[in-house]
Length: 131
Image 1 (cartoon, rainbow, N blue to C red):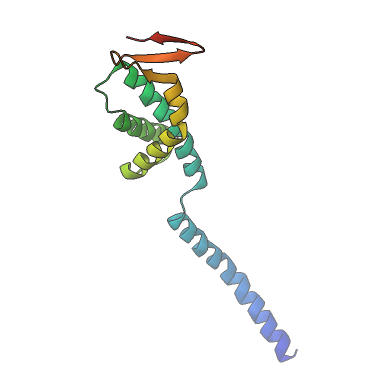
Image 2 (cartoon, rainbow, N blue to C red):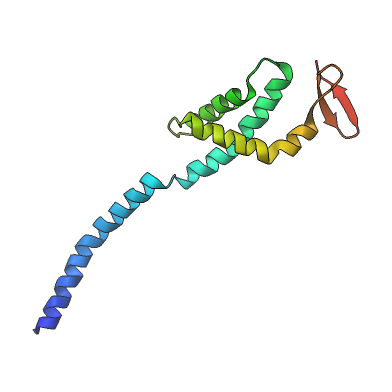
């Protein structure tokens, strides 16, 4: 055997041992610094659901803090789906983003009557007051 083939075999052996260790290290870095894609997808969908629930609850209880209600609902949904408890600032940002995306739809469905501040629901061309 010549020196080149021995060096090549050593490099291949070392690479075979180091490759899984390097991949594991990189995977741990990715998990640490980049959130799980399924968590991001769950946050996006659950935040929209929480905003809608808060708007519906807000129609019947004017004293309700809709944003905090939505944050609490989002936290509950995530925990029921198997995710650990999340930072409240993160959830607040998700709720605000979801509200911005849904704002036009929410305002077209849940309107406030300017005369007596009674919430109304718009269905087609008719508007019905909810007590």
